[in-house]
Length: 245
Image (cartoon, rainbow, N blue to C red):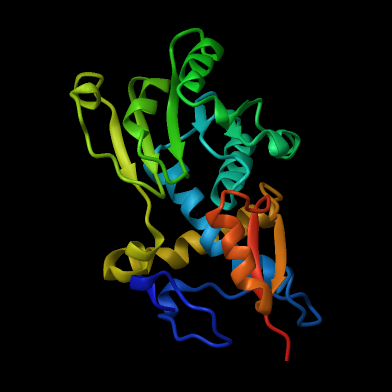
């Protein structure tokens, strides 16, 4: 693992044991989940868990807007929030609408609507706005989209930064949070907490609070898969490269 440079493609990697969780086994010593699922969970579900429960502090009856419910982190967040009784509004490409609905989103919006999404979210919340906004997209307009959040609400970003251009966040008293898995892995204090997060997520998986949606891609097709992501055409959920000996 090379946290500073976004990881690597290799058969083996050295990691700090504080940042890993053992895959539970059945009585016959078989793993209870596939290796592909186990590979995807830390990258997708751990950030979603931290964003929802540590940063945004969601609870039953709250509402949340997730700007890409079909991505790895977004799909995990939709399911986790729904399992807790949170009202989920999510955006995605129109081809992914039914997929995101199946995850538990009460309302699924066309992500191509741009700023019109703000008016739609406000309409769905009777003009009040949602309690939390989870941005999992690489976007430059996160501050503009803070208008979907109620007064005193919170935003959490996993893939972009807010460079404030106005006093909106201040005057509306919005809390801004970030979740960056590489940063958590690199810091000794947060590294110790990753195994706890992993254990909590594993317990939620056992209780069927979420399911993984993984596309396995042969290593030799990895470049093609990355190109699809860069072109805005990623598969639903998570992509895992598979090595065969």
